[in-house]
Length: 338
Image 1 (spheres, one colour):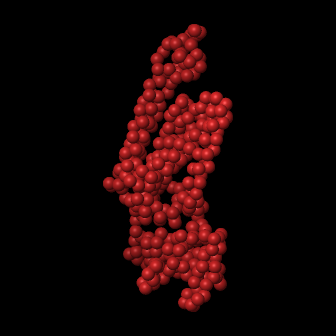
Image 2: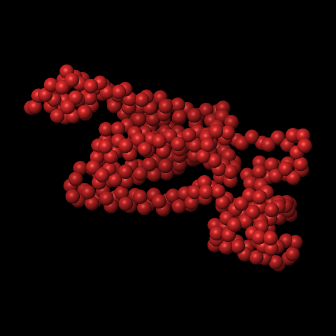
Image 3: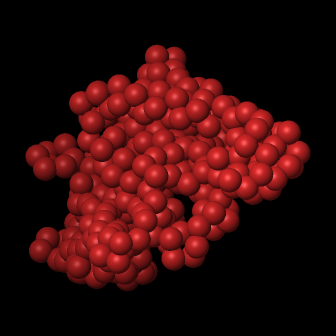
């Protein structure tokens, strides 16, 4: 056994992420019990407000979009009616853009009483039921289009990433190389597990909105923002969790490529991505039945337990830099630390 005499360096205390996670989880409960989770209704009693402005704000509050809102056709084709002319139609095709020009209420319509007039050009204007509008059109805002694309294709992304991960896993297993994965044979970092916890938390908050406050999410879909300020509390928590997720992901990359070879780091990232996608689907599905909150609490307990175990290492070896619980001989390189 090699004996080297090096002065041990005391490691920096780990940031108490456990308390932060518990606080984030408490946000969900606070939202359900006390939070203001809806967009405020506009004040229509302001002196000097025109009738058109009042109508516009009313439609924005009730339908989440209003006059001059821009949409893009996502369906292969859409037929608009040239009312009040009978049997007069024209078609729009995927990628065509329109603007909301007018609203009308038809109480006798058993399918949908709300009709919306869309203008593609000065000559091409027509009416469509609101139900068909929401189904076939997407707001032109890039955030709204990303939400639509992700919601429509996330299952395909999961299959692709999972298949890629399994392919690399089998290839490396065939070559009998050691594999490292989050939590199991993990790298010396708490950030990968924290990233998975943030994904679970974000999915839980997202599904909470879908179950308890669908109007809030629908309004956000038509009027998106990346700012967590001046939005309902539950939406603010969701946006903050996304920002924290991105910051922690950068921390994961920094730790990952410092500790592993590029090939092992890429494989680890594939496994971490698969884990995050799995947690996304798992907590989306379980939150629908209200048991997702119990699983989230259990996940937080696992994370805090892992965090305490990691915080037990107060020193670093003066020779190899590995973490140590106590002074003495380093179990990694055999150096004596005093």
